[in-house]
Image (cartoon, rainbow, N blue to C red; front, side, top):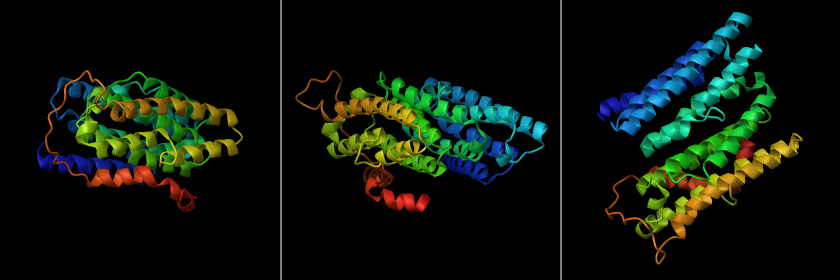
Length: 348
């Protein structure tokens, strides 16, 4: 892709998200989301591969549907209540429509069906943008409208997302689909605690972005898109595979890694709100997710020689990719748990 075009598209991505962050009027927020969608579509289709084009069309149709629903919900609220302000979404029909539209935008269950299919058709770099940056603008709106949403609806979305995110990833062999289901499960954790402690939602979103960045960049560095490819990567780059395995365990929420921190604090908050059953179900769903991360770790670290492998050895060529961002995100992914008290002091 032409570097000038790439700069314009990435700037538009940044502009769209910033516009949604800064807006207090529904039309301006909607405009930011639309700029965001239109900027990522050429990035998704740049490979000119039928699968990439198919993923782009699926993404465009779902995002256009969600944008239409957002506009309809905002117009309904303005018609019924005379308010365009984001914080005054007071009509129950409008607020329910709005949360469902935003759930479709970020891929929350039961509106998640597009996410694994779309992510599977993209390159790892574009998939990383879709899994991290594209979640920010809709999440900013969800956090603002959460006080007006029915708590049972939010809890249902959260529980269903963690269940489907854990269950859906169990049988997958494609790494991008596994990361898509991982994304759905993490979104569930963020939504479930939103009504009680929005600061914990932001903390969970921040840690999720760093952990997912580490996973995507590690797979990109080793050119891995399937579990089979991972099983051959240890001999080439043992250090990278060791840190990738730890990053995946962090995504699963295993102590003493960073990923344990948001899960621990969310479960603590749910227990404090006298919801022990919800907390128990969430913890059990986390075990499902942890299982498929362990499958990846097993393939990476425990199927090395002299075990027999039923796939061809890749050509060993020297890697010229920059490793600075990967090194930073890996450090954050593995080592933030000890400073949990300091982070809590900052966000509360």
